[in-house]
Amino acid sequence: MKLDSYIKEFLIQNDNVIVKGFGAFEKVLESAVIDEKSGEIHPPHMTIKFDNSLKIDSGTLSKFIAKKEKISEEDAVKKIVDIVKLWNDDLKAGKLVTLEGIGIISEDKTGKRKFEAKIQTGVFPDMYGLPLLSIDETNKAQQRIQQDVKKKVQENKKPDVKEKVKEETKKTPTQTKSTLQQKKPIKKVNKPIRKPQSTNEDDKTTKKIILSALIVIPIIILIVFGALNFDYVKGTFNNSSEYVSNLLSGNSEETQINSDLDSNQVSDTNELDSAQNQTEVVLENYTIINAETNESVPAKTEDLIEFSNVEVIAGSFKSKRNAKKFSNQLSNKGFTCKVLARTKGLYRVSVGSFNDVNQAAVEIVNIQELDPNLNVWILLNK
Image (cartoon, rainbow, N blue to C red; front, side, top):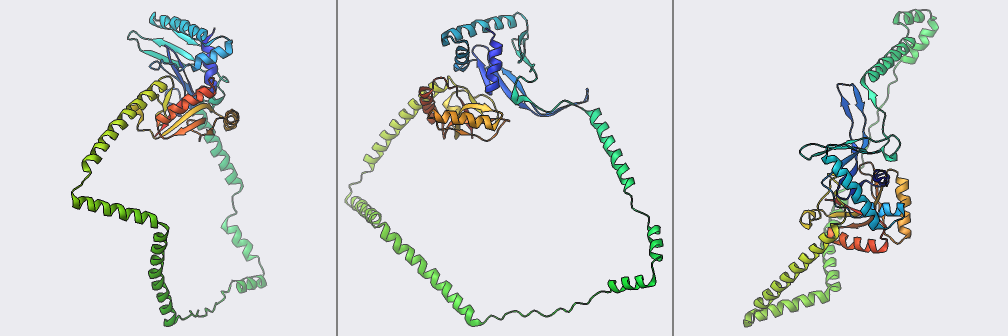
Protein backbone atom coordinates (compact mmCIF):
# COMPACT_ATOMS: atom_id res chain seq x y z
CA MET A 1 0.00 0.00 0.00
CA LYS A 2 1.35 3.43 -1.02
CA LEU A 3 0.40 5.68 1.88
CA ASP A 4 1.70 8.83 0.18
CA SER A 5 -0.70 8.39 -2.75
CA TYR A 6 -3.67 8.15 -0.36
CA ILE A 7 -2.46 11.26 1.51
CA LYS A 8 -2.27 13.14 -1.79
CA GLU A 9 -5.75 11.95 -2.85
CA PHE A 10 -7.22 12.95 0.55
CA LEU A 11 -5.66 16.45 0.31
CA ILE A 12 -7.32 17.01 -3.08
CA GLN A 13 -10.73 16.89 -1.38
CA ASN A 14 -9.86 18.42 2.03
CA ASP A 15 -7.74 21.18 3.61
CA ASN A 16 -5.59 18.97 5.82
CA VAL A 17 -4.89 15.41 6.92
CA ILE A 18 -3.23 13.98 10.04
CA VAL A 19 -1.09 10.83 9.77
CA LYS A 20 -1.17 9.10 13.16
CA GLY A 21 2.25 9.01 14.81
CA PHE A 22 3.92 11.07 12.05
CA GLY A 23 2.44 14.57 11.54
CA ALA A 24 -0.11 16.72 9.70
CA PHE A 25 -0.14 18.00 6.09
CA GLU A 26 -2.08 21.19 5.30
CA LYS A 27 -2.83 23.24 2.17
CA VAL A 28 -1.81 26.91 2.70
CA LEU A 29 -2.12 30.03 0.51
CA GLU A 30 1.31 31.68 -0.02
CA SER A 31 1.62 35.38 -0.91
CA ALA A 32 3.68 36.76 -3.81
CA VAL A 33 7.50 36.77 -3.36
CA ILE A 34 10.23 38.56 -5.38
CA ASP A 35 13.63 36.83 -5.58
CA GLU A 36 16.17 39.66 -6.04
CA LYS A 37 19.04 37.29 -6.84
CA SER A 38 17.38 35.34 -9.64
CA GLY A 39 15.12 38.21 -10.76
CA GLU A 40 12.00 36.04 -10.58
CA ILE A 41 8.51 36.94 -9.33
CA HIS A 42 6.62 34.13 -7.59
CA PRO A 43 2.88 34.97 -7.75
CA PRO A 44 0.37 33.99 -4.99
CA HIS A 45 -0.11 30.22 -4.99
CA MET A 46 -1.28 27.28 -2.87
CA THR A 47 1.33 24.99 -1.28
CA ILE A 48 1.58 22.25 1.35
CA LYS A 49 3.05 22.61 4.85
CA PHE A 50 4.02 19.87 7.33
CA ASP A 51 3.63 19.97 11.14
CA ASN A 52 5.07 17.01 13.05
CA SER A 53 3.57 18.20 16.37
CA LEU A 54 0.07 17.03 15.33
CA LYS A 55 0.15 13.24 15.56
CA ILE A 56 -3.30 12.33 16.96
CA ASP A 57 -5.62 11.19 14.15
CA SER A 58 -9.41 11.29 14.47
CA GLY A 59 -9.67 8.25 12.22
CA THR A 60 -10.45 10.15 9.02
CA LEU A 61 -7.46 8.84 7.06
CA SER A 62 -7.91 5.23 8.20
CA LYS A 63 -11.60 5.34 7.25
CA PHE A 64 -10.68 6.80 3.86
CA ILE A 65 -8.07 4.08 3.18
CA ALA A 66 -10.35 1.29 4.42
CA LYS A 67 -13.04 2.42 1.99
CA LYS A 68 -10.58 2.61 -0.93
CA GLU A 69 -8.82 -0.70 -0.15
CA LYS A 70 -12.15 -2.41 0.79
CA ILE A 71 -10.71 -3.65 4.07
CA SER A 72 -11.63 -3.15 7.73
CA GLU A 73 -10.64 0.02 9.55
CA GLU A 74 -8.45 -1.97 11.97
CA ASP A 75 -6.42 -3.42 9.08
CA ALA A 76 -6.05 0.08 7.61
CA VAL A 77 -4.74 1.39 10.96
CA LYS A 78 -2.18 -1.45 11.17
CA LYS A 79 -0.89 -0.72 7.66
CA ILE A 80 -0.55 3.00 8.48
CA VAL A 81 1.37 2.19 11.68
CA ASP A 82 3.81 -0.12 9.82
CA ILE A 83 4.54 2.44 7.10
CA VAL A 84 4.93 5.30 9.60
CA LYS A 85 7.40 3.19 11.59
CA LEU A 86 9.55 2.71 8.46
CA TRP A 87 9.45 6.46 7.76
CA ASN A 88 10.49 7.35 11.32
CA ASP A 89 13.34 4.81 11.26
CA ASP A 90 14.65 6.21 7.96
CA LEU A 91 14.56 9.78 9.29
CA LYS A 92 16.43 8.83 12.47
CA ALA A 93 19.05 7.09 10.32
CA GLY A 94 19.61 10.34 8.38
CA LYS A 95 17.75 9.27 5.27
CA LEU A 96 15.27 11.34 3.27
CA VAL A 97 11.61 10.35 3.10
CA THR A 98 10.15 11.21 -0.31
CA LEU A 99 6.36 11.42 -0.59
CA GLU A 100 5.48 11.32 -4.28
CA GLY A 101 3.58 14.40 -5.43
CA ILE A 102 3.76 15.98 -1.92
CA GLY A 103 7.33 16.70 -0.82
CA ILE A 104 10.56 15.57 0.86
CA ILE A 105 11.07 15.27 4.66
CA SER A 106 14.44 15.26 6.43
CA GLU A 107 15.62 15.23 10.07
CA ASP A 108 18.75 16.87 11.51
CA LYS A 109 20.88 15.69 14.42
CA THR A 110 18.73 17.55 16.97
CA GLY A 111 15.63 15.68 15.82
CA LYS A 112 14.05 18.67 14.09
CA ARG A 113 12.27 17.76 10.86
CA LYS A 114 12.22 19.88 7.70
CA PHE A 115 9.72 19.64 4.84
CA GLU A 116 10.19 20.80 1.24
CA ALA A 117 7.02 20.81 -0.87
CA LYS A 118 7.33 19.10 -4.27
CA ILE A 119 3.90 19.49 -5.84
CA GLN A 120 3.40 18.12 -9.34
CA THR A 121 1.61 20.37 -11.83
CA GLY A 122 -2.01 19.39 -12.34
CA VAL A 123 -2.28 17.12 -9.28
CA PHE A 124 -4.19 19.57 -7.06
CA PRO A 125 -6.96 21.38 -9.03
CA ASP A 126 -7.25 24.17 -6.45
CA MET A 127 -3.51 24.95 -6.55
CA TYR A 128 -3.39 26.43 -10.04
CA GLY A 129 -1.81 29.90 -9.94
CA LEU A 130 -0.17 32.48 -12.16
CA PRO A 131 2.99 31.46 -14.06
CA LEU A 132 6.48 32.32 -12.81
CA LEU A 133 7.56 35.75 -14.11
CA SER A 134 10.99 37.31 -14.72
CA ILE A 135 11.78 40.94 -13.90
CA ASP A 136 13.86 41.30 -17.10
CA GLU A 137 10.92 40.15 -19.25
CA THR A 138 8.53 42.60 -17.58
CA ASN A 139 10.98 45.50 -18.14
CA LYS A 140 11.30 44.62 -21.84
CA ALA A 141 7.52 44.44 -22.17
CA GLN A 142 7.19 47.92 -20.61
CA GLN A 143 9.77 49.34 -23.03
CA ARG A 144 7.90 47.90 -26.01
CA ILE A 145 4.64 49.42 -24.80
CA GLN A 146 6.26 52.85 -24.37
CA GLN A 147 7.70 52.71 -27.91
CA ASP A 148 4.29 51.81 -29.37
CA VAL A 149 2.66 54.72 -27.52
CA LYS A 150 5.26 57.20 -28.88
CA LYS A 151 4.66 56.03 -32.47
CA LYS A 152 0.89 56.46 -32.12
CA VAL A 153 1.34 59.99 -30.67
CA GLN A 154 3.55 61.03 -33.59
CA GLU A 155 1.10 59.64 -36.15
CA ASN A 156 -1.87 61.44 -34.58
CA LYS A 157 0.01 64.71 -34.03
CA LYS A 158 -2.13 67.87 -34.60
CA PRO A 159 -1.15 70.52 -37.26
CA ASP A 160 0.87 73.61 -36.26
CA VAL A 161 -0.73 76.90 -35.26
CA LYS A 162 0.88 78.71 -38.23
CA GLU A 163 -0.94 76.47 -40.70
CA LYS A 164 -4.26 77.22 -38.95
CA VAL A 165 -3.61 81.02 -39.31
CA LYS A 166 -2.92 80.65 -43.04
CA GLU A 167 -6.16 78.76 -43.56
CA GLU A 168 -8.15 81.42 -41.67
CA THR A 169 -6.64 84.26 -43.77
CA LYS A 170 -7.89 82.57 -46.95
CA LYS A 171 -11.50 82.92 -45.84
CA THR A 172 -13.71 85.58 -47.54
CA PRO A 173 -14.83 88.79 -45.73
CA THR A 174 -18.45 87.53 -45.69
CA GLN A 175 -17.38 84.42 -43.81
CA THR A 176 -15.50 86.45 -41.19
CA LYS A 177 -18.53 88.74 -40.65
CA SER A 178 -20.84 85.78 -40.12
CA THR A 179 -18.45 84.25 -37.62
CA LEU A 180 -18.21 87.57 -35.71
CA GLN A 181 -21.98 87.84 -35.55
CA GLN A 182 -22.19 84.34 -34.16
CA LYS A 183 -19.62 85.14 -31.47
CA LYS A 184 -21.50 88.20 -30.11
CA PRO A 185 -22.60 87.52 -26.54
CA ILE A 186 -26.33 87.44 -25.83
CA LYS A 187 -27.38 89.41 -22.80
CA LYS A 188 -29.68 87.64 -20.40
CA VAL A 189 -32.26 89.46 -18.33
CA ASN A 190 -32.57 88.03 -14.85
CA LYS A 191 -36.04 88.43 -13.45
CA PRO A 192 -36.36 88.71 -9.67
CA ILE A 193 -37.80 85.61 -8.03
CA ARG A 194 -40.61 86.32 -5.64
CA LYS A 195 -40.63 84.23 -2.50
CA PRO A 196 -43.95 83.26 -1.00
CA GLN A 197 -44.69 85.13 2.20
CA SER A 198 -45.63 82.99 5.21
CA THR A 199 -48.14 84.47 7.63
CA ASN A 200 -47.71 84.55 11.41
CA GLU A 201 -51.02 82.72 11.83
CA ASP A 202 -49.72 79.61 10.04
CA ASP A 203 -46.66 79.50 12.30
CA LYS A 204 -48.81 79.75 15.40
CA THR A 205 -51.11 76.91 14.35
CA THR A 206 -48.20 74.55 13.59
CA LYS A 207 -46.63 75.26 16.99
CA LYS A 208 -49.93 74.51 18.76
CA ILE A 209 -50.27 71.19 16.91
CA ILE A 210 -46.72 70.11 17.83
CA LEU A 211 -47.17 70.99 21.53
CA SER A 212 -50.49 69.18 21.81
CA ALA A 213 -48.98 66.09 20.14
CA LEU A 214 -46.04 66.06 22.58
CA ILE A 215 -48.46 66.12 25.52
CA VAL A 216 -51.15 63.73 24.29
CA ILE A 217 -48.99 60.94 22.74
CA PRO A 218 -47.05 60.00 25.97
CA ILE A 219 -50.33 59.90 27.93
CA ILE A 220 -51.88 57.52 25.38
CA ILE A 221 -48.79 55.27 25.51
CA LEU A 222 -48.93 55.05 29.33
CA ILE A 223 -52.66 54.18 29.28
CA VAL A 224 -52.17 51.43 26.67
CA PHE A 225 -49.16 49.98 28.49
CA GLY A 226 -51.03 49.91 31.80
CA ALA A 227 -54.03 48.20 30.22
CA LEU A 228 -51.93 45.52 28.51
CA ASN A 229 -49.73 44.80 31.54
CA PHE A 230 -52.34 45.13 34.31
CA ASP A 231 -51.62 41.67 35.75
CA TYR A 232 -47.88 42.30 35.81
CA VAL A 233 -48.26 45.67 37.59
CA LYS A 234 -50.68 44.13 40.09
CA GLY A 235 -48.33 41.21 40.86
CA THR A 236 -45.36 43.53 41.26
CA PHE A 237 -47.33 45.76 43.66
CA ASN A 238 -48.43 42.74 45.75
CA ASN A 239 -44.89 41.36 45.96
CA SER A 240 -43.47 44.73 47.01
CA SER A 241 -46.19 45.14 49.67
CA GLU A 242 -45.50 41.64 51.09
CA TYR A 243 -41.77 42.40 51.22
CA VAL A 244 -42.37 45.66 53.11
CA SER A 245 -44.69 43.90 55.60
CA ASN A 246 -42.06 41.21 56.24
CA LEU A 247 -39.45 43.87 56.93
CA LEU A 248 -41.74 45.65 59.41
CA SER A 249 -42.64 42.38 61.19
CA GLY A 250 -38.99 41.25 61.37
CA ASN A 251 -39.56 38.03 59.38
CA SER A 252 -36.70 38.49 56.92
CA GLU A 253 -35.90 35.59 54.58
CA GLU A 254 -32.40 36.71 53.58
CA THR A 255 -30.70 33.73 55.25
CA GLN A 256 -32.94 31.24 53.44
CA ILE A 257 -32.39 33.00 50.06
CA ASN A 258 -28.62 33.09 50.55
CA SER A 259 -28.51 29.39 51.42
CA ASP A 260 -30.56 28.56 48.31
CA LEU A 261 -28.24 30.65 46.14
CA ASP A 262 -25.12 28.93 47.55
CA SER A 263 -26.54 25.46 46.89
CA ASN A 264 -27.53 26.43 43.34
CA GLN A 265 -24.06 27.85 42.63
CA VAL A 266 -22.37 24.61 43.82
CA SER A 267 -24.64 22.49 41.62
CA ASP A 268 -24.05 24.80 38.63
CA THR A 269 -20.25 24.57 38.98
CA ASN A 270 -20.40 20.77 39.24
CA GLU A 271 -22.56 20.55 36.10
CA LEU A 272 -20.21 22.96 34.27
CA ASP A 273 -17.11 20.89 35.16
CA SER A 274 -18.74 17.65 34.01
CA ALA A 275 -19.83 19.32 30.72
CA GLN A 276 -16.29 20.59 30.09
CA ASN A 277 -14.82 17.14 30.72
CA GLN A 278 -17.29 15.54 28.31
CA THR A 279 -16.49 18.19 25.67
CA GLU A 280 -12.72 17.58 25.93
CA VAL A 281 -13.21 13.79 25.61
CA VAL A 282 -15.22 14.27 22.40
CA LEU A 283 -12.96 16.93 20.82
CA GLU A 284 -9.70 15.01 21.45
CA ASN A 285 -10.44 12.88 18.37
CA TYR A 286 -11.07 15.81 16.00
CA THR A 287 -8.95 18.50 14.34
CA ILE A 288 -9.58 22.03 15.66
CA ILE A 289 -8.37 25.00 13.56
CA ASN A 290 -8.23 28.72 14.46
CA ALA A 291 -9.70 30.64 11.47
CA GLU A 292 -7.53 33.75 12.08
CA THR A 293 -4.13 32.03 12.47
CA ASN A 294 -5.01 28.90 10.43
CA GLU A 295 -3.25 26.86 13.14
CA SER A 296 -4.47 23.91 15.18
CA VAL A 297 -5.81 24.46 18.72
CA PRO A 298 -5.62 21.86 21.57
CA ALA A 299 -8.90 20.38 22.78
CA LYS A 300 -8.77 22.12 26.17
CA THR A 301 -11.98 23.88 27.14
CA GLU A 302 -9.99 26.70 28.81
CA ASP A 303 -8.40 27.64 25.48
CA LEU A 304 -11.70 27.38 23.58
CA ILE A 305 -13.87 29.63 25.79
CA GLU A 306 -12.84 32.82 23.93
CA PHE A 307 -14.29 31.56 20.63
CA SER A 308 -17.97 32.52 20.19
CA ASN A 309 -18.47 31.16 16.65
CA VAL A 310 -17.89 27.42 16.17
CA GLU A 311 -18.41 25.76 12.76
CA VAL A 312 -18.42 21.99 12.17
CA ILE A 313 -16.88 21.57 8.68
CA ALA A 314 -17.64 18.54 6.50
CA GLY A 315 -15.65 19.53 3.38
CA SER A 316 -13.65 22.27 1.60
CA PHE A 317 -13.72 23.09 -2.13
CA LYS A 318 -11.98 25.47 -4.53
CA SER A 319 -15.14 25.72 -6.65
CA LYS A 320 -18.33 27.16 -5.15
CA ARG A 321 -20.35 24.96 -7.50
CA ASN A 322 -18.80 21.79 -6.06
CA ALA A 323 -19.37 23.07 -2.52
CA LYS A 324 -23.10 23.61 -3.24
CA LYS A 325 -23.35 20.17 -4.84
CA PHE A 326 -21.81 18.54 -1.74
CA SER A 327 -24.12 20.62 0.51
CA ASN A 328 -27.19 19.36 -1.39
CA GLN A 329 -26.03 15.76 -0.97
CA LEU A 330 -25.73 16.23 2.80
CA SER A 331 -29.14 17.93 2.94
CA ASN A 332 -30.71 14.88 1.29
CA LYS A 333 -29.23 12.73 4.08
CA GLY A 334 -30.91 14.88 6.75
CA PHE A 335 -28.11 17.34 7.62
CA THR A 336 -28.67 21.06 8.11
CA CYS A 337 -25.76 22.58 6.20
CA LYS A 338 -24.59 25.77 4.51
CA VAL A 339 -21.72 27.01 2.32
CA LEU A 340 -19.52 29.55 4.16
CA ALA A 341 -17.98 32.61 2.52
CA ARG A 342 -14.68 32.06 0.69
CA THR A 343 -11.64 32.10 3.04
CA LYS A 344 -8.07 31.06 2.30
CA GLY A 345 -9.18 30.49 -1.30
CA LEU A 346 -11.68 27.77 -0.34
CA TYR A 347 -15.45 27.37 0.14
CA ARG A 348 -16.21 25.34 3.28
CA VAL A 349 -19.41 23.35 3.87
CA SER A 350 -20.67 23.62 7.47
CA VAL A 351 -23.06 21.11 9.02
CA GLY A 352 -23.54 23.08 12.24
CA SER A 353 -22.99 26.61 13.63
CA PHE A 354 -22.78 27.13 17.41
CA ASN A 355 -21.95 29.78 20.01
CA ASP A 356 -19.61 27.54 22.07
CA VAL A 357 -17.69 24.27 21.79
CA ASN A 358 -19.95 22.41 24.23
CA GLN A 359 -22.88 22.62 21.82
CA ALA A 360 -20.58 21.66 18.92
CA ALA A 361 -19.35 18.56 20.81
CA VAL A 362 -22.93 17.35 21.37
CA GLU A 363 -23.79 17.89 17.70
CA ILE A 364 -20.66 16.03 16.51
CA VAL A 365 -21.85 12.93 18.37
CA ASN A 366 -25.21 13.22 16.60
CA ILE A 367 -23.48 13.70 13.22
CA GLN A 368 -21.39 10.55 13.65
CA GLU A 369 -24.53 8.57 14.58
CA LEU A 370 -26.30 9.89 11.47
CA ASP A 371 -23.36 9.18 9.11
CA PRO A 372 -20.29 7.40 10.61
CA ASN A 373 -18.37 7.76 7.32
CA LEU A 374 -18.60 11.58 7.28
CA ASN A 375 -15.23 13.17 8.18
CA VAL A 376 -15.67 16.45 10.03
CA TRP A 377 -13.39 18.98 11.74
CA ILE A 378 -13.91 22.18 13.75
CA LEU A 379 -13.31 25.82 12.67
CA LEU A 380 -13.12 28.50 15.41
CA ASN A 381 -13.89 32.23 15.03
CA LYS A 382 -13.88 34.93 17.69
